[in-house]
Image 1: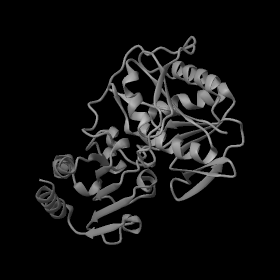
Image 2 (image 1 turned 120 degrees about the horizontal axis):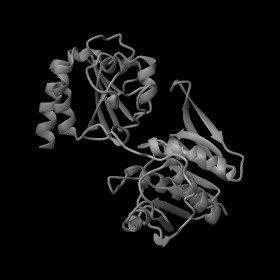
Image 3 (image 1 turned 90 degrees about the horizontal axis):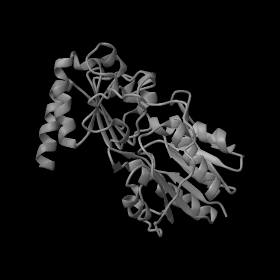
Length: 319
């Protein structure tokens, strides 16, 4: 029997969608391996989310009371729960936080680790992780041979399935250790209206928007769709928008259900960041632009005519 531990994540006191996604993924793995799913939530007042994770497959929810995020502290806490619960598989969100503490956890518990998994399956009693390689030009399948296997999972890559587990909450107090790094201040940008990494729909602009004054054209469509606003490196390097919006190899890696690329040629560095999107819609005047090779749907036309027309039509349909 192989048990699964998932580590949930919160933002501004709310449970992030990726927490439900990896709980559902953990449930499928546990069912295949004949084990149970334990969810771990770290923070203040996290007990109230036990039911949310129980509804998507968690048999139990371990809660740990802690202050603000610190990678060293989180690594000690997660390692302590692993040593107590002894799972064979650990799933962690592939977010800025997860990427920070998960390698530390792997070292502490002697686990192998695969980062940025977009697919998880079971073969021969081992979890197989599918992940992009070579800047998204191909995919590789990886197995971990150590007793404990840790996988960081890309947001929006796993389906949330309602399959109730007991969801019984239990408090734990693993050692937080003595963190050598202290956070003394945080300087946060305003951020996107909808966070890129978790957005189901992204409207993204490139050099074809011609200047920063034209972002409202794309923002209008994004607002109607409840989408996040993204950008190519060319638009960011030109100073038209902040780096927090950048999608690509040197920006954020995203896997939305729908990615609408407006005036983006489709350089390999950009495709590395959004190539795993379920549907890709390309709008570009150049019919030979590389983006059309990966697009599910393509529109050869002027984005300043196409995007407003799309916005108007979606307003009629969505109200």
